[in-house]
Image (cartoon, rainbow, N blue to C red; front, side, top):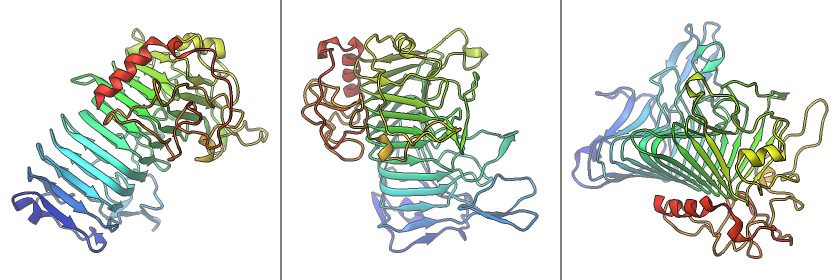
Length: 465
């Protein structure tokens, strides 16, 4: 890395074996493996090999905690194996590419400086986290920088956690950006073991999540320095629990456009049914819009079970009591009624008198007393039933209502799992197309009856590319 950085011009590093970083002893920054400063850029070809760290702690009882059996850190625990961060990209580095690399057991991965461009493809990043040292997001993108993630799997992040008070944890989002651009395609973010501040947190700029699966934690957008826009297109969002970060959130003027996507929210957690209390810790899951934030649903399904709330009813905090957010939906979106919000209330809430609310959209496990039903595992649980109200709803799906990729303006032709995106010229609501076409009548509404803002949204999505 140092040789490439000090050699003029664009350089390529090709791994021929796995690399252990446990014995690394950097002269300038002992906790970061490299700082990339060559403005011409760098390519790293992992060739399927791994960059491996094995951080560990031992407690006074002699029990060793590693990246695969994490425990909250206590002051009496002793660090026996340090976790390193991978690299800091300096400002104005034109092109850093990382291909086919496995990163396993480090602290953070990349911090991206101003106006730099980073692309990570066909890579796996797992078992990363704080480990009691220098908290940082897995990816951090700063002013005018661009982060491209293509076919990347990120899992088991922030295994070790520091309790701030009681059982609450404070942490950075896994992927964080400020006045920057994120383009995430065909990727999976699975934060089963995470207690982070969310999966993706973007403040100003544009975050595009396309044909991807977001599990465990949620997404957040706000305005900072410039307008903040989150575009979630043809994607599945499935929080695992009822925490404050298990949501799609728009606040402080941020705008979230959720297009042809599937949101499944089940408040059942570790076998217990937790009803969301009316406070900030989970109020509004899975949709939170407050302090001027806006969430727009377009041909999207929000299916909520085992929860009392589908939106933020009370202020998120006293600071936001006088500035609520806004939820919108087009006539081709489905929102499932919950205990405190029946179909009529949801239609008022989303400002859409033709909002679809009837029927059962997904398969659920049998009712086993005393617990309510739960979603079956993905991907099966994301597919609509053959009798689902989600099937064959969006007309002219290959024409006026075709899906546009906000990253490059191309037409999206497959669903999140690679199946053809339309059947019989129609598109199912959500990110998943039922593979066996099921004939059914078109909605009573024609194309021209859809919400006017949906056309503006399509133009805006094109402009974001």
